[in-house]
Amino acid sequence: MNKQSVRFLVTRKIFITRIVVTLLSIVFIRSTIFIPIPGIDQNYLYLELKNSQILNFLSGFSQGSFFLLGPFTLGILPNINAAIIIQFLIAVIPPLKRLQEQEGEIGRQKILRITRYLTFIIAFQYGILIAFYLKPFLFGWTILKAIQIAIILATGALITLWISEIISEYGVGNGPSLLILVNISSSLPMVWQIFKSLDTIFLQLFFVILFLIGIGGILIVQSARRQIPLVSVTSFYKNSIVTEKNLPLRLNPSGIMPLIFASTALNGVSTLINQFSSNLIQNQSFNTIYLGVYFLAIMYFSYYATQLAIKPTDISNYLKRLSYTIKQVPPGFATIQFLRETLNRLAVLGGFLLASSVYIPSLLVYLSPILSSLKGLSVTSLFILVGVAIDLATEIQTFKIVESYEDKQVI
Image (tube, rainbow, N blue to C red):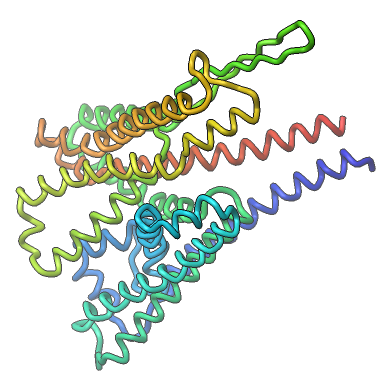
């Protein structure tokens, strides 16, 4: 067996191993939602929480359509909150910013360690809040029992974080995003329930067409690219060879992260408000303000996440090393300025499309009250579902391309 054959077999084995690791991790996480915390009347608790902000807040990131209060109820939610806080701290604290930008892999590992510690602190705080909320549902409630429940929930959140990191490093796809994808997928039967609740065939057909158009629009937004023409001139003695390529920049550079960050932050705020004034949540004026703030939050996180994810200076330096320049743009500062302006426009446009799409069901209900069933359709969940699925398919396709290349080398 030659060297190419061995490399091909190793590549295929790695790909299969990554898929197995991912599937086993998902099966483990999904099976843990059936483990309850003892001493709690789960049926009574679910009836009390049904249609509440708290249940929506927890289920969206941990359990999907099924709810059982257990060690893994918090899911990946504390880690998402920790990541949001860390990103803000990096922007305002110079030492953390230097750690991320100048220390490479070592700096990334240190920030990851800080994020883990913060994840435990946030999970413990959530656990304390939940434990105090459970006081009417527990027999013999004490402060000690509340702390025990908080520790159990925080430990489950850390185990979920560990599993998500295993998926990211040894599996296929981004671990936290993939876990959210699985949880949202478990709620897909709700789409069928909305479809059945429509009274006439015309409305059902309209819903199907609207749903397909929505999926198509999400695919376009998530897959669209702005192609920036590049040119490279290589001289061989007196002859010059001009090479032209394109630099693809996504229409939505930050992907689905603005939706995850905005929905997590706003759901947390609305849950806290609900604890102090449940009537305020039902107020129409509050809902209007909430939707407006949600729109602005998605726009902000889209712009901010793009600034963190893509650095014009790094792209300019990379192009310089490859001897490429942007067509009709001088290298150096002019290239950096051009990339910064282009990314800002893409971030604003992508954020606007993301934020606008979230309001489509509410707008249709406002135009025609007969479509009130569409209120249950979460465009945010659809965007996350399709976005993660696209990223996952892209990564799998990359592995397949590498495997195909190795196969050709063997032949």
